[in-house]
Image (cartoon, rainbow, N blue to C red; front, side):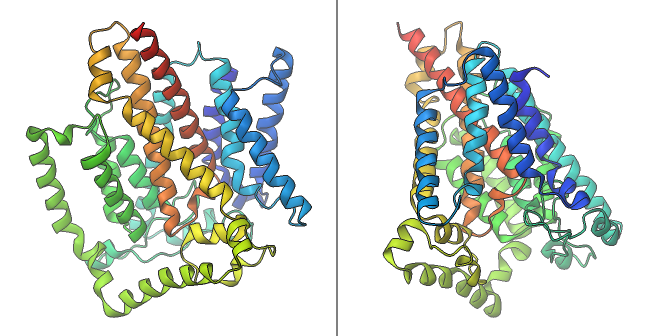
Length: 426
């Protein structure tokens, strides 16, 4: 295996970690992280670059070590450690990209992301066929609950689509990345395979986008619906490099969205207006906020000393607040601030000024290829993290590695695009 492909193969293998865990009973995520760092440190030692790193990445590593040290001094152990796996993987992936930047081509990165999302969609389709054919019990046998700390077994989830159309099958779980994440994966696949980007140097068959849309509708949940709304807001307002802002494209896309909304609102959004459901959602989203603001100021800032503190609030349905109760605000603020600036800069790569500057240059295709990868990848990461308003699937096995991979590609591609632009300005 070539070392430049290590991030891809680690991410690819991590998709099947939850299935491996339930079949073996081993929490293999720790072993995978140790393996990654063993390979990385062995390679960098042989190459004589063990203590070299991108300056910004080095500062991040120092910050995390500082947080861990404070946890140990306060008797909490490595409390932040499991929540920072994303950044530990990103540190390795991104350094590999930087060290081997001459070997890392946009076509390779695009193909790798493509492969990951195609595998996810194929797995979801297979699971859907099992459910439709009445083989729920077989899925539970394949994916049993073994009591592992990092993954749960296959569960029965209410399917609003099936109920509305008098069909008898449960909601999707996602066999390969853990339960209750299938709809989020469908949304992310829709974004990746979206045909709405203008300067898209890479081609995909439309069937993958339509499969993503179908999977979203046949097993919907409120989290996925909110994520779609968030993406549509970005698409129609903030995102550059999209077709929807052109009048000849806006009308058919808008009409298609209206049609899909009319078709689906009764089984996606209408249940919210049932008095009992409305009261339930108000309760589960207000209670966490009240729990959080009732904490002592030092615990709000740095998290509570007891590892079981957040677990006491079983009704705490806002995932981000559950995390904040444990790890405090510094890591969360740093994360979202970083994502904001990466998104801002990657989106700016498609500003009219920059596109006009590189339009007739020989490196236009390379520039737009890296810019596209940076913009779409960080959009996927941000949408995934928005899902923490309800679920904590971002910390699931498989999810962690995918996010790290996308984040690394976004930062690396941003750097490459900016380097090309600076070179063309001279």
